[in-house]
Structures are given as structure tokens and as C-alpha cells.
Amino acid sequence: RQGYEDTHWQYSAASYGDDYSYQSQQWQPVVWQDDRELRQGEPYGKSTNYRDQHYYRGYHPNLATTHLRQDSTTTALFLVSQPGLCFLPSSQPSGKPSLLMQYRESGLSSSSYELSQYIRDDADHYDPMLLGTWSPVQAGGPLVSTPAPVVPLKFSLPHVAVCFGAGGQLVLSCPHCPAQGQLAYVELHSLEVILHDTEELKELQAFPGPLVREDLHKVDVITFCQQKTATSCDVSTQTGRDSALLWKLLVLLCRQNGSMVGSDTAELLMQDCRLQGKYKRQDPAANLIGLTGDEWMSRQPGTLDLITGEVPPVVETQAQIVEKFTKLLYYGRKKDALVWAMRNQLWGHALFLSSKMDSRTYSWVLTGFTSTLAASDPLQTLFQLMSGRIPQAALCCGDATWGDWRPHLAVMLSNKAGDMELNHRAIVTMGDTLASKGAVEAAHFCYLMADIPFGYFGVKADRMALLGSSHRQAFAQFARTEAIQRMEIFEYCQHLRQPESFLLPFQVAYKLLYASRLADHGLPAQALQYCEQIAIMLLGQDPASHPILAQQVTKLAERLKLSDPLLLEMPEQDQTLEPDWLVELRACCREWEVRRSL
Image (tube, rainbow, N blue to C red; front, side):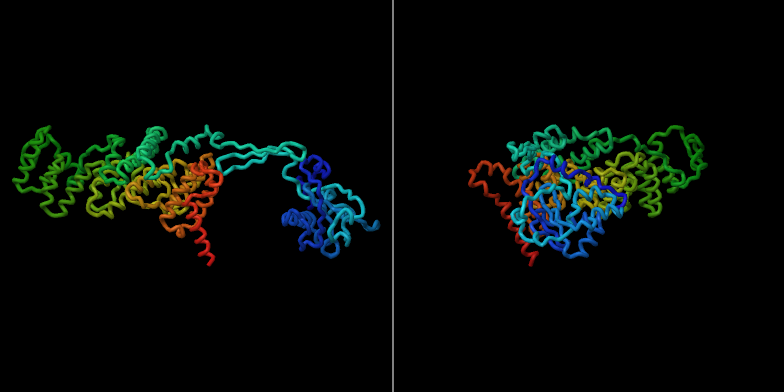
């Protein structure tokens, strides 16, 4: 194209071919009759034909359409070699300018030098003798041509070829040339040895997985959780305390075989709870007990009591307060007695007396009592919940002014009574509030208490997909190894209580992903054990209901099956045997394929 130079094409064909050490000495001719016809004898298949058409139509469109299609007998004889393609020279009338000269003079292409590397000036006429099977004998003489590649080779010098083996190995093919008498050999390196200093491999090796109920003692799981709490959780921060709380919850579930009650969880919540002294009592507001500001001041200690005509002492004992409450009742002043009891913190007397009066008076006294509690007091949460309302703490927790969220959840879990649906909604609302403020571990703790099921990554309506990890972030950050391990421990605890439990979202995406990571880090035997556990779970269910998962597990297991220690101990003639679970799973996959095709 005008003003465009392609750097990939600007080099000398002769020098390129001389420097490349992998040249083949066998040349094969190819005839191009029409761009719609397939080349005869082309060793590169459709890709070479596509590259030639792309070159002539993309870089020189007039050459491809005008000169090749107008004359149906025009062909070009190519020599195909390992470096590239070239035209065979043929006779051309001396009076007619060549295609190269025409393009040079017309100025349609600024890449005339580039074009000269691929098209000979006398190579645009048809020779019928070249359409058949070609050989140097038929040509009638020796063939002399300069090889010129159509497409630049990917490597101009010998290089190292690298690939990853399924057995946790790195395979290197060294850059030797057997044609020049050099020995060809490959090197096998263990990925486990190469990556032995990386944190990723250490994290994978420390985990006692796969966690199988029959093969693993739960003490090993408890020890791992306690180590994670001690080493990876910074308890000086709120996020670190929330993360440690999840690990401690897993320890509690493991010790109690996957079951727990509200009081157990409340005890766990209050272990490291920081009561910051914000739950102080305060005087009830004057308007709540029916007094104006002046009346409130007039009834302070040391002023004349207009009812009894006495001056109360500055400091009154509890007995004196009760005695005055009784005197007010002598005169039948129930409301004044209630005000006196509320002002002097005799809430028991006030609540009992008001309960025997009308409901409006009882509500008035109850409101006065709750006004003496701090807004962040867990008693407020309990009283609001028992009054049939969503507690304010469930809507505001997570702020610095509200302090720790744990006492509020503890009081709701330990006092489940009355409307269970309201209690459930209050806990879920608290989890949603914490999640909206970035406290993912704390939110997931609340969701577990409310028995919220696990969902899938990418489904925003689901509240959680991996325990302790937000599924609203990028997948690489979401599917961290620690989150997958924590989720597997939770699944193990569920199996302790109910062996047939099946967490489908975890089996589909993350357990198989974890097995792949093990294989990538040079731990193929452990990865094969994970494939076996997934296959056993699938065969216990209906594999046809999860066909994609069954197919992916089968593919990975077929690559890793030779890492099974049992196969390595067998004689050579028996190493072709496969585990029973793999044979059965493959049969289920084939059966599903047949049913789908029908």
C-alpha cells in the first residue's frame, strides 16, 4: 500500500536462507492456476495458500485481481521448501514490460524492493509442461533458483523448545542439529524443585488435602486452621480479626462434627470482642417522662417537693427512693410515681406498675427505659428484635461509631425466640450491611449463621461463592488458594455431619481448579487424588446431570493417571491398567455423548 512498509518482509532472501540452519534440501513444485483452486502437492495445507492470497490481495490487490483473474491461463510455478516459496523462471517476450517494472513505474506500490524478493520478472506466463508431475528430468536440465521465503520464519537461529509435562515436569528440547552430527536430547526438570522457594508451592504443600472423611483425622484439619489463625491473621486490624474468626469457626465445626448451636457461636464471638466502654447508661430524656426542662430542673434533689411539702436530701439512698415511690402511691398519684421511678432508675417498679395500667402507659415507660441505653448497646438490639423490629445495629454496624458488630450478632443468636423469620432477616440484613462496607469475612460469618447457600461466581444475586472471598472482584483475586482451602475445610465439616452432602458450586469450579494448580506446581499425585474424589462424588450423584464437570475431570485424570503410586509399582505389562473410577467415569461421559447425539 502507498506509504506503508512492512518490516517483516524487508530482508534479503539469500542471506535469510544462508543463516538458517534447518534448511531442507528437498524442493517440491506447486502450481497456482486460480486462487479458487487448491495447490497441488502443497505441504503446508490451507495456511500457506491463505498467506499467498493474503499477500497478493492485501499488499498488491491489482496484481491479484487484474493479472491473475483476467488471464485464466496465467499461472506461477512455485518451489516450496522449508524456508519458503519462490517462482520458477520462464520465458517472456522481451517487448512487454514485466509486472515488477509496471508496478515500479506506476508508483502504486512503495514496496518494490519487497516485491522483488518474491516475484521474478519473467514469472507471469503459463507453461503447460509444468502442470503434471514435475521432476528435474522432465525439466530437461538442471534447475537453478534462489530460494525466497513467502512468510518470514518464526526463528532464524536454533532455539530451545519448552513445554510442560503432565507429570509435573518442565521439558526442554536443546538447540542441537542432528543433521550436522550433533546429538539431539531433551532435559526433564521437576517443577516442584524449580518452585521450591515460592510461597504458592509452600501454601499448597502445607494443606493436608484432599480432605476425605475416612482417610484423614480431624486433628490435622484443626491444627492447620490454628496455624493459619496464628500466622496469616493480623488481629490488630478489623479485617484480620474477622479472618481469624472464620478459621476459629471452622475449628468449632470440626470439633463438633459440623453441628453448632447459637450459644456456642455466641461464646466464640465474645472471645476476642473488644468492649470499648460505649454502653454507658444515661438519664432518660425529659420529654419522654412528660416533663419540660424547667420542671425537670425543679424536681432535682435539694428543691422543695410541692407534693409532700418536704425538701428531699441532696443524696438519696435506694431505700429513700423506694419510700417516696410508695408515698406517691398512697396519694393515688400513679403517673407521678412512674415519673419518679423512671427518673431514679427504678425501672422494675415502673415497668410492673405500667403493665397493670393501660398499654399506652406501658409503651411510654418502655420507651423511656430504652432511651437510657446507648444506641450501640446490644440490649437495644435485643429489645428491638423482641419488639418485632429489625434492630438498628443490623442496618448501621460496621461504622466506627457503632463499635464491634460481634456482640449484636451474639445477642441475636443466643435469644432466638418468637418470630424466627424476623430473626433470620435481621441476621441476613446485618450480613448485607457488612458486605456493603467491605467486611467480607464478617458478612460471610453472618450468612453461615443464617444458612445462606453458596452460589456461583459472576451471579451478583448470590451472596457468597467462596468462603471469605468476594465474588464481585476479578476471578484471579477471588479464587485465591487460601479461599479454596477454607472452602474445602467447610465441606469436610459438612461431611462429618452428613456424609452425602454435596456442594455443587465448589465441586464444579474450585476443586477442579485446585487440582490443576497442584499439577502446575509439580504435585501430580496429589492432583490425581483430587480428581478421584471429584469423580467419586459425581458417581455417587448422577454424572449425566453434570456432564461438563465429568468430562473435564476425565481429561485431567487421563493426563495424570501415570502419577498414581500404585501404577508405578506394577510391572510394565500392567501399567496400561486404569483406576476403576476413571473407567466408570469415562463410560458415563460416553453414554452422555450418545444420548446427546440422539
